[in-house]
Image (tube, rainbow, N blue to C red):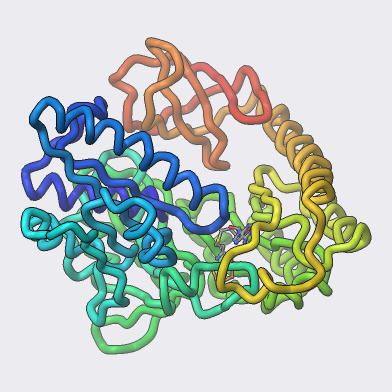
Length: 432
Ligand code: SAH
Ligand code: SF4
């Protein structure tokens, strides 16, 4: 979602006549888009700002002014701290207000000492005020839903991104059509709980994500649909059926379970048990036997015992994830779990993370190795590590490098996989 937000902030700035530079010292305006989900990400903002302040000072000695802005969830959660700790920041805006960036930038010259802060939850939806989502070609993100009403006890999202909001169906379809018309072959529907989508159609009728996927699949020229991130309790049969019926819906689903222990899931305030989750996975695999699963895991949530942790490993062994993200539980200010009195020792969290990641990586490597010799359609939308190489994604979101010239950029190409590591594949084009 932050990649999407950064892209949209870029769209606003392009519209205002700004151009990008890759040399920080040349920038008249520097904006950090920030994440508050774990402590490490949030603290990084302040250390990065320290470095940016030095650049601002250097440029000042050359007679140049530099405007510094901070946008995103760290601002929403820590606006007063930003004004106090890093007063040289000119403006700070939450993730729901950045559509007001043009006004904010106009007001910078009038600011007197204090940082301009804009963190109120606006009545209007930012999506209605953003410029067109310009296609960068190949793959595009399309936000259809934002915010969350679930209040998992560890998570800041309901506080930083606010209540759940679904964009109207017509807006989503219109934006998708424009993206495809300007070169997008793949659209990734985005939301904190994307499958809880319930946007209204033109008749005021609420539609779900399955309806959207079926409508999007009718767009001529669209070759791939993905959606992320899904909340297990909100996956219904309608959506599962899409994985059977819709060819261009990719056979890969990121469906976070967080923990395999029902005791921990309850303490996390998740609305699903491990059994509910496994039932959904079973149905998905029945709908499309080729589907590959991915998940998020938190280890060391307050009260997690060795047995609870083993239950998480059991789920991994059952589902055999082809990819996953795993994190040590991080105490977040203002969330209920931060003050639970049964916190797990850092050392134990680290040990468990190592064990979990080793297991996850072993399944990931196994899946990647099994890809060797197969022919896969790969969408190349990034430059490769070396000259003359392109980097793309298989239907399973695996990174794949191939020696290809620029004429294959933003195209889907049949590639024979020749090599595999835990994190990427390499392959060659099928001749003939
Ligand atoms: N809505 C999605 C997840 C969005 S947050 C869901 O409910 O599954 C992205 C991921 O960050 C979460 O899945 C979780 O694994 C991780 N996360 C959130 N808060 C965290 C915390 N306090 N400590 C560690 N990881 C956390
Ligand atoms: Fe956070 Fe996801 Fe839980 Fe919402 S459902 S509170 S975004 S982890």
